[in-house]
Image (tube, one colour):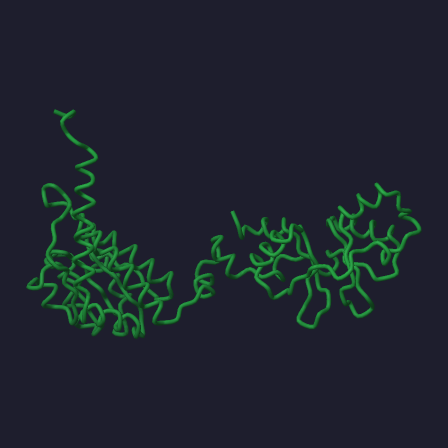
Amino acid sequence: MRSQFDVCAEAQAVFDKEIEALRKTRDSLGEDFEKLVELVLHCRGKVILSGMGKPGHIGTKMAATLASLGTPAFFMHPAEAMHGDLGMVTKEDVVILMSYSGESEEVTRLMPVLQEIGCITVAITGNASSTLNRECMYHFVFPAFEEACYMHLAPTSSTTALLVLGDALAITVAKLRNYTKEDFGLHHPAGALGKKLLVKVSDVMHKGAENAVIPTGSSLRSAIVEMSSKGLSMVTIVDEEKRLKGIITDGDLRRMLEKGIDVYNETIDAVMTPNPKWIDCREMAVNALQFMSDRHITGMPVLDESGAVVGSVLMQDIFKAGIVR
């Protein structure tokens, strides 16, 4: 019997039913969805998601997505709500209650308390005549579609549609709020993406006593000592006003030694690379990495807004910061 069961065809049928549910939900978007977006966009408190079972799991993800895109939101378990968590709800909040049948007892019994609090309530259901739909101030009703479960029992198409509806809500609100990449980075500081959007060259550069820098007119020997004592692969040459004049890298030194240059008597002015590539300390570190990669260099001086040398940044410093993986 098992050999006659087409596993892939059965799985594809699940995809087809869920895709059809998404298509129908997409095509049903109208005034009710626009109102939901407006309520979330102008919410003066928090957006609170609540649902039991599978919709509750989706609600947790919806709350996380809203929060990550700049809308203060959290998930409130309906059972825990009746044992004290309702204390987190204020009249400034928008509470979105999710139940495909609209009759989930754990969810519907929250209504008297929510109505007493005076918060805005929104029902997301698949049943326009349900208790939840009648009791809430606003509602979104899914169009009719089949659950992908062959018994038509397990929430499948309905939870997929709810998940995508939540993504559509969060992204639409974020776009209306003009939420930027920099805002996203601020809310995701620990991740590599957040670091790309937040970490500047000034955060990773070698500065002050850690930087290898030497004035013009110095001996090449002094430059070698400065570079090695700071443990860097380059030394920056500056004038009396700390203006950039040139650099010498460890690669330059190797080539000089191969040519037999007298490191004791030669001055850095005669062997340095003048007018080297540099970067502004206010630039994003990820952009500095790209700049160096494009030019096949591993380090460069860092200048401030006045044009004075304030540090050096190496490619390895940016990698160590965890900005790229």
